[in-house]
Amino acid sequence: LFGITQLNAVPSNLKPSSLVQPIQLNGRTGEMVTYYTELNIPTLKGIHLTDITPHIRTAIESCGVYDGQVNVLSKHTTTAITINEMEGRLVDDTRQFLLKLAPAAYPYLHNDLHLRNGPPNWPGGDEAWRAQEPINAHSHLLAMILGCSETLPIHNKNLMIGTWQSVIMVELDGPRTRNVAIQITGMK
Image 1 (cartoon, one colour):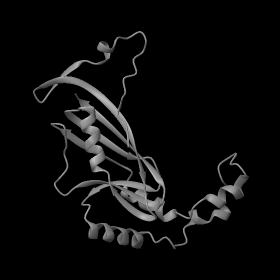
Image 2 (cartoon, helix red, strand yellow):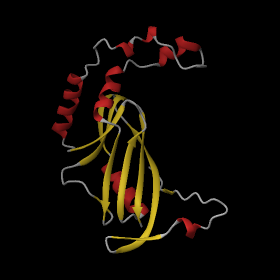
Image 3 (cartoon, one colour):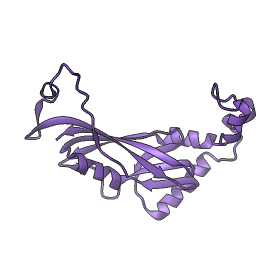
Image 4 (cartoon, helix red, strand yellow):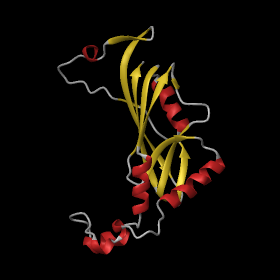
């Protein structure tokens, strides 16, 4: 599903040892490293919640960071990242609550496509852009309220979240394939 890439861009005039210095943290000696990967997540129609916690734990295990942090970022304006319990009935309550908070049928200005211009140089011009543009102002508003990222601690190679907590990607305008960035920084 994803690969781990170590980010160590080394200028030609520097040796790797001059960039990676041993450090001490919590009684351990190691080196500070940064890893980056992306998840590609297919989603369902409408509001859809996906538990991405197992993927984050796999990334932490694969890169070997002992202590540090993981930053999780949705790369879209109509998705969100949140932390909560991933229980079926709560997921249904969440969907219902979000639809009441920002109803899709409300007359949002963003949805007046006939009054908006497409990006410059869109193939086929404004009309072609309008034909493919979704009516999704409610999705943007919900994404702004929920937020697009979370930063979580890693300690002893473990993601430090509570027993009932999951890291959840919230699709607000599906179905689509979504990209979630995971960056892990810490001591190896």
